[in-house]
Length: 223
Image (cartoon, rainbow, N blue to C red; front, side, top):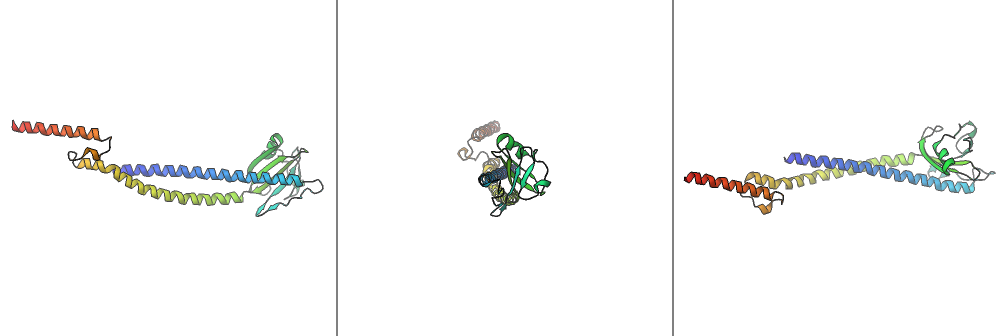
């Protein structure tokens, strides 16, 4: 009985820890992803303020350790300028998710594998006053490194919490089963006040039945 109860404690703890760990990882991943998009949006505002026809690349594409790719796209999807490639050799971008959203809503976001550089990128696009779309993007290396680090940390935390839960489960199981084991040893000598409140009526009934049996047995013996 003790082993079954303890096993249930372990399974419940493992399930709760697993769900918590997965939930925490998804939450932190979404927070970081939104922060990256917000950072791209802030950079886009600066680029827009510095963008001129005479000097279309007045804003440095390198920000600290991050390399930002800047692309100017016409309303029909034609690539006018790209800071990391030959715009004349690039395919039409009208079907890009972030470009479609920018044309419709003024701005758009997406994260996918780049057809040009074959790596996952974050994209932020915004519609300019002249109708063109300015898009900036950056590689997802930072978020991938963070996710790898996060998975490792969450795994270690989950293992530590699981060990603690197993130890606590054994302790709680022992305390839970102790009164029941005491009943099995000698129910007549058990003080009802020392038992769980839910067990007291049951023990009282068993005691009464036990006393009745003894009394009948004594009467029959005297008879």
